[in-house]
Amino acid sequence: MSAFQRADILIPKTDLETWAVVACDQYTSEPEYWARVEQRTGDQPSAYRLILPEAQLNAPDVDSKIEAIHTQMDRYLQQGLFEAFPQSYVYVERTMGSGAVRRGIIGCVDLEQYDYRPGSESEIRATEGTVLERIPPRMQVRQGARLELPHVLLLCDDEEDAILKPLQEKKETFRCLYDFDLMEQGGHIRGWLIPPEEADALDERLKAYCDSAPGRYQDLSGSPFAYAVGDGNHSLATAKACYEALKAAHPDEDLRAHPARWALVELENLHDPALEFEPIHRVVTGTQPEQMLDALEKKCGAAEGFAVTCITAGGERTICLNPKLGELAVGILQEFLDDYLKDHPGSVDYIHGDDVTRRLASVPEAIGFLLPPMEKRQLFRGVIAGGVLPRKTFSMGSANEKRFYLEGREIL
Image (cartoon, rainbow, N blue to C red; front, side, top):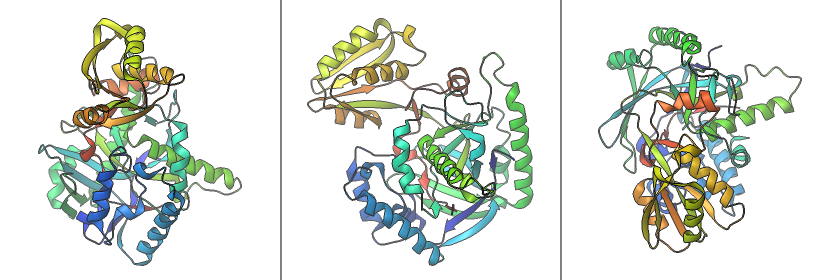
């Protein structure tokens, strides 16, 4: 069975400009963003009613919020809010504010062929270290939910653009399912239903791509793979954990056809020119900035190396991290922070955007680190060679370019 395949897709029959909202793991330090979304959606049908923004994950009423999410899912299904497209693919084009167009295919992944653990030899692999403590709160949202709304972006290493290009060339002959502007400067999105004959051809191209995977990167000692989780790793890890928990709770049942075995995702090409890797910066709060900077310079500094801009209320300075300590600046810095914060006060947040990082770091007892971007060609190589990349190594675009919740799928 293919690791990425057709899915039973649901499309809302409502105002999609109000329906679609950005991934829940964005704007975690900007509650005002989510306040605007709540005001914008009002009492209209919206994916906002079906998700829990991570900015609210530690709210005192989180249990009642999750219960309300599950209740709203039931209500939308009972109201017949969705049009169903069984065993289908949807071709998607997302136009960014820059005018660049990012292409993708909506389908589902087989969680039996996904493993987020370092050293995995599965067809689908995590690109960053999975923080296991982040999974249980997300499981609380997914378990008991009748619907999933995906923000996971899966990547294929298709230099020839053999998978997506034929769809791009024929899209105007397909049925257009949606065509609208996304809120909060999210750009524009269009989606087309891939007809059966083109879906068959796509399946053949996907098979050929997967069959060629073992022949790539022969210069590396690790095992090659077909698909990398480019965004939403913890969401997909949560889907996997829920599926494994389901199997453990029903050891005598055959669950091979259970809908929880699969998760809805968007597949994109790593080599798409519109797909840009942005660094994910760090902001530490509740700490002594100068003391941390002195420790960083002493342990990791060098005359030349990876240049990292360090921001405090007192100004900015650049520290070069010693390249002998790792392949990526983010890995060196993250290892330092993890070690330092074991014995010193402070908490880390992961921030998209230079301006936001500077703003959050320009207050007392805070420090921000602006990291250089990672080159795309390092992605598959890094995962094959090292198991996973350091957590929060990169972001596929800025926060407002993240995937918006739009399509859905029943998972119970």
